[in-house]
Amino acid sequence: MLEEIRADYPVTFHGVGLSLGSTDPLNTRHVARLKELADHYQPALVSEHLSWGSVGGRYLNDLLPLPYTEEALDLVAARVQDVQDSLGRQILIENVSSYLEFQHSTLSEWEFISEAAGRAGCGILLDVNNAYVNAQNHGFDPRRFLDGIPVEKVQEIHLAGHTVNTFEDGQLLIDTHNQPVCEAVWRFYEIALRRFGAVPTLIEWDTDLPDLNVLLAEAAAAQGFLEAYNVWAA
Amino acid sequence: MSGLRDLQFRFSAGIFDSRRGAITEHVRANGLTGSRRLQVYRNNVFTGFTEALRAVYPVIERLTGEEFFRALARDYITKTPSSAGNLHEFGSDFGEFLVDYPKCARFPYFSDVARLEWAYHEAYHAGDRAPLNLGKLAEIDPAHYAVMVFELHPAVRLLRSRYPVKRVWEVNQPHYPHEPVVDLDAGEARVLVHRPRWEVELHSLDIATFEFLDCLGCGHTLGVATDAALTVNDNFDLDACLITHVENAVIVDVAPSAVPPRAG
Image (cartoon, rainbow over all chains, first blue to last red):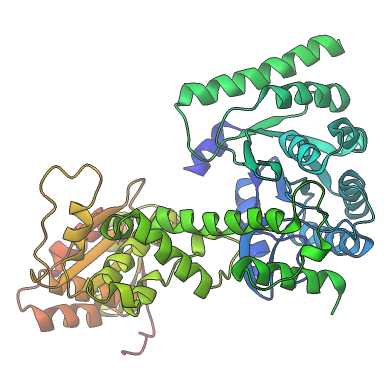
């Protein structure tokens, strides 16, 4: 089926399982299978998250947060290079939603991802929702995130809906991909477009799927912002 | 051991065993406590695995009930480390797990139902293959027939059970129109699970056809497979069986084999 889709449309690949930030050896079986797929389908872009998901051979199959340290930076930059060498192509790394920060981080998240992308020679997939979620969860101005990302690195943007979880001691936004993009994220997307240009945008909605016309309306809304940017930029 | 590696081991331990993994000291409290923040990851990880199991094992969930299934999933997840970044590979031995799961001891057929659901899942995600052109069979020198080796479609799975698992599966589908009644003593099931194109199909096979396809799937020659089928049914119709399973893309390729694989 993917072959038929690929014949009519451009396709991008987006991974969740490479565990780029793990201290385990790179999973060569996973990389080899990805290469097989990428060689066969020739996607326009291949992306993966800047997170870890396995240690000691055990996978948690989740996008777990890294400390933003020189040690982690060295590790992910080398691993992204390894992946790119194996695939024979550039990949994009994506900023993830996170629900905690480590005390011993010495860099901001935007410094970390920018430096990793610079050292590895990869691109960046900017998830506007994730940046917004993290700004709320960790208490920073989301515009600082955008301003810290080099314009020329961003080749794709993601949008998604999140959920607000309220606890006795406060709130956390959780990246759930199960509802419409919220108003604040649309506004933030608009700011991102003004900085990064009309970058190809994907809306992630993969849980509690609504009717197709709801999804089409979300896509049309994003398209509206892209076209408005083009008018503005002209 | 590096700082990051140690941190990752302790993080992982803290996810699967909330009493362990004192990494909260490394977490910025910043409004919410470190343990609250870790709890979000614990929930996400368990929810992710549980949803993966629910997607693969809807019949088991229906048989056990939703609440029981969640507790069962939690026990399985804790005891079964995921070994791949591809979540579709998680849950492969859920059927084995059910064999020894004390709370399901009264339902010995659960494990085979789970194996059938895993076969369905594998069939769904297996690669595509074009059907074999029957003309290719006609080109083969009859002298080679006995040593021919066939290739089955990558989505083909063959499953045998002492319980009528296909019937259990069918009556537990969401829109089954009748009373979901199954006679568990109805006899053995031999099921072909297949996805020739978009949809996964389940077919009941007679014993000879099952033996025949099982032999071919193991790489045995047509001669060996035919003997196996004839051993259990003198009237096994080889021509009809071959044509049926070429036409429905169970058999997708053929190669005359100079050296037949060892029997076994």
